[in-house]
Image (cartoon, rainbow, N blue to C red; front, side, top):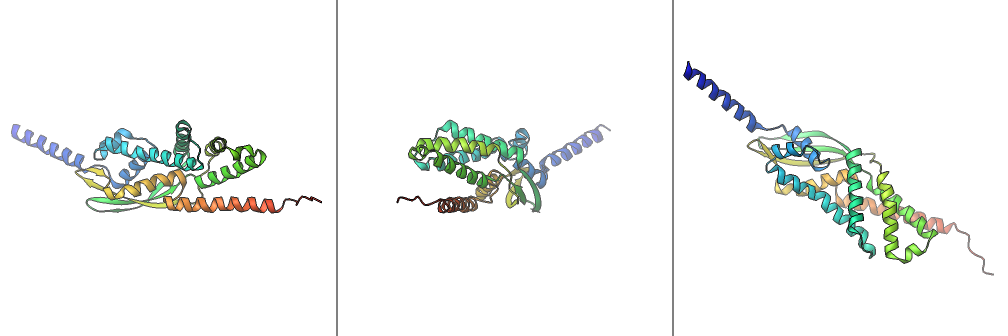
Length: 245
C-alpha cells in the first residue's frame, strides 16, 4: 500500500512538472508580449513566462528610450539645442497617449512545435497628423511673429509648446496596420529570436505612429509636410499685390 501511495505521488509530480514545462499558449504569449512592450503591464508574469524575462523586459523598454533619442535628434536638426527634460516629457506624454488610446488584436497564429508567427492588427496614434497640425500652427505663429523664425532656439521652443498641445489631443489612425512577429519556445519558455529585433521595433512604432515601419512613417510625414507647404504657397498667391506707384 505504501509503495502504491509513493508511486501515485511520483506520477502526480511528473504530471505537474510536464504541465509546468508546457507554458502558456502562443496567443497568450502574443498578448503578454504587447502588454509588456507597449503598455508596460504584466511585468512579473512576463518575467516568468519568457526566457530571461526580467532582462528581456529591460531590453524592450529600450524601444521607448531609442524613440526619445531619435525624436530629439529630429527636432535638433534645426540647429538648436534640444533640452533633454523637454524631449523626455514629450515622449512620456506620447507613450501615455499610446497606452490610453491604442488598440490591437491578434488575427492569425501560425504555430509549429518550436514557435509561432503571430499576426497583429494595430490601431495606433496618428503621429503624422499631429506633426502636420503642429507645422501649420508653427507657420501661423511665425508669420504673426517673424522673430521666431530668426532664432533657432525660439523656433524650437515654439515647436515644443505646440507639439505638446497636439500630442495631448492626438487621435488614433483610421486604419489599422498589419504586422507579424515570430516567437520561439524552449522548455516551456517563450523567447525572441535575434532576427526579430526589427519586427519588435516596428511593432512598437506601429502603436506610437500608426505606421508599419520607419520608412512608411517618413514617407507619410514628407507627404503631409509637402501638403502644408503647398497650402502656404497657395495662401501667398492669394495675397493682394502691393501698389508701389
